[in-house]
Length: 276
Length: 276
Image 1 (cartoon, helix red, strand yellow):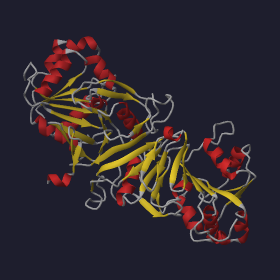
Image 2 (cartoon, helix red, strand yellow; image 1 turned 90 degrees about the horizontal axis):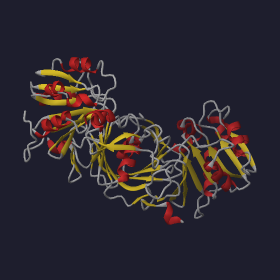
Image 3 (cartoon, chains in turn cyan, yellow; image 1 turned 30 degrees about the vertical axis):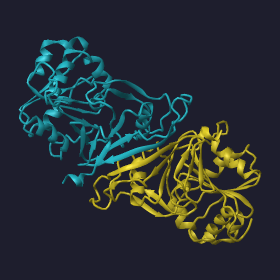
Image 4 (tube, chains in turn red, yellow; image 1 turned 90 degrees about the vertical axis):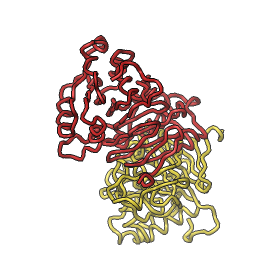
């Protein structure tokens, strides 16, 4: 592993998971297998930082990864922000091929390790060609501005969303998870309405977007929804009282299933079949 | 009321409600007030046909409409299909300015009164310039092909939807209700995927699409989502196994709030503010 960010070298891979990925040792485990394939016998750091009570997560993932040829799997937890610069904690990231952020509260990740040595080390792993994976809260935190909360299963009301600076591992994207399961279409559209420069990416449970070189590919059993606001002809975001329902016309949506790809810069999807 | 459909005369109005409309006698009741305004002191027939047990519906609506200057309000229920041609039942529709279909099971409406004298009379009221309103199941049944069931809160899987012939009061549209509340975006996209000739119309609770002369206007506290598949560049509907998740690229979506309009033939929205 390199201690300095390597400019000009191709960054690594993100696996952005919508939560609820199959972890049953007898199940398909499509997403964990993809993680393991990329760890390729190396070291996986399971970061349970998003959780207020991390107990159980590590044992669960250790069991799920047991037969998937991970060389070494260690748990990284920080109780409070002081620990985020702790040399012993930093040592856990040494030689890691991948860091996997489990679920919980995305604000716990950013408030505990934002601008810390652990964060710098995670970024180095990514920029050195490593893998950063995250599920649920661990997915949301990857964007530059992240979704923190907002009503699910209701049409977005202006002023209803809570956003915050994320870890900025992927640019120009805002991520939502448990997407179809919690009826979050309204809130993702609401987030994109604030600034159509960002693409909305809604990820179903047991589904992931594998991001490499500015392109994503879908794996898992659900869909990744892309909300592209670049053609929006009308939006009432600033005109409305905060309890008014959002209007937004001419939103482009892509529903991407397994194997489908999406070019984040070009904002264009490619069907799975064209990749065969 | 006229006994014959009147060709060439402007048809009436549909008020298509996403369920859960405010019925609190002390509440805003935006939708019921719109119904009452159009009944304009005339006779309103409350059709509780969608319900297997209609008890309670009528009393509830009677209370909600009590101070809204409805001239007369009567309940129309049919226990079984034989009753759908019963002269006493038909008499209830005599002189009606409006028929309001309450919620329940849309298949109960179509299977009990489809191709009956009651249906013919309802259509005559509509074609004579009257109002047909419907909430929840009473909304779904209005389209030519209607959505009967399909998983909510999950991305559509090919083969997962149950559709059936509807009452065909509005052409080229397929309607879903309780839309944001039950996370039904995936299933409405799935319905449109079958034939992008139809526009998907997803209506939130306490929200309605008022359809007149081929245009709709939104009233109520939520949104009407329009799913327009006419630009879809890729869809895997026929290629996939029935348990595979749907892929659909380049879907156009409009989120319409109160006062927004949509031209069903042109497939174009107009913001509320342009109407002021």
